[in-house]
Image 1 (tube, rainbow, N blue to C red):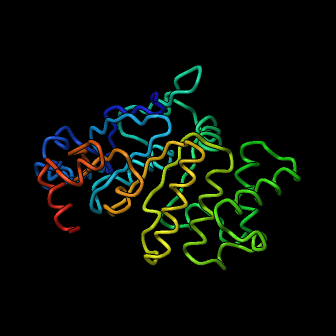
Image 2 (spheres, rainbow, N blue to C red):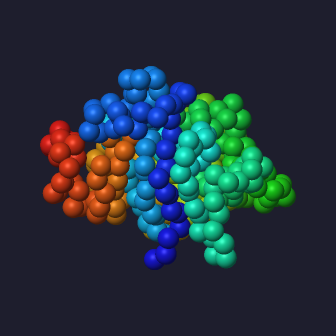
Length: 276
């Protein structure tokens, strides 16, 4: 395999920041809030590589920085420092050096994002097919017959009844809304999917079906995935490697089986013990 995404020393600070922020925050201090200026160090020094076709899990409690990582990579928030390098076949794209127009184009064609809250990823008042068509139009794939057929095929592939493609997702169950989000994310055949807590709030049986769908699509399409979750069962099911985060920092990284069966960091040990 070859590297698709390289993240180098990525950081995000909410607030004005000061020269003491990084000294007095982080896992060793048990907080990500600076006692001198009140800023929150949501992410600090995050570095990792994601291979083509790999599923990389990111776990940690609320406030650990895992969702911030997704928001930075999909341009929902600006990074305070650091780099994210995306390896194309013939070039390397420095994501945070792109201007606004190029960021939109990159996200429309090279990234797929599935949020915990479908309201962030879908226009709930327009049809399921219309949501997919919207993404295709943004990527300048505008022939109507193509839009309709592509939407139909994606909804069918993700288990949404084609008979409901003209219904708005507001009428769908939570699990069905997530399926529409996944279909929309896949519309432009992006090489990278960012999945942020996609099973939270769903019934266990629905969670299992969503996870099976994600795994099936990954195996069929060989798309790379960054899977953010607080649920160890999700990373066990999906991810070959896992990052463990706490107070904005990566505290452990390695093969998922190794991390879940023989964790080395005390915080990871606590997470695993709590899940038993």
